[in-house]
Image 1 (cartoon, helix red, strand yellow):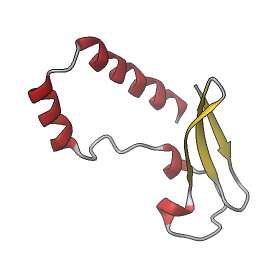
Image 2 (cartoon, one colour):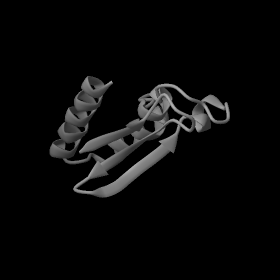
Image 3 (cartoon, one colour):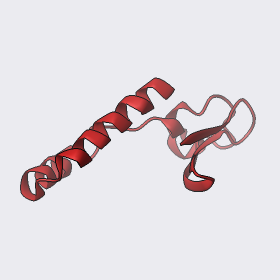
Image 4 (cartoon, helix red, strand yellow):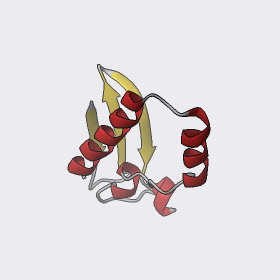
Length: 84
């Protein structure tokens, strides 16, 4: 996975690519609510792990996902932490 960053110029943004396929992209101004924001796109990169926490917990309790899926999510979170 590749994290693309457009920083320190007008319209700062970040995107994620996997095998050359765009997975996600976000402009920093969407999060900061400042048009043409120029700086490091930290908000476009960060993820709020507490968002929808109740929904995530109820899914885990009701659906009981495969342990491999849960471990994959935890590994992915650790990798994202190292990128920041």
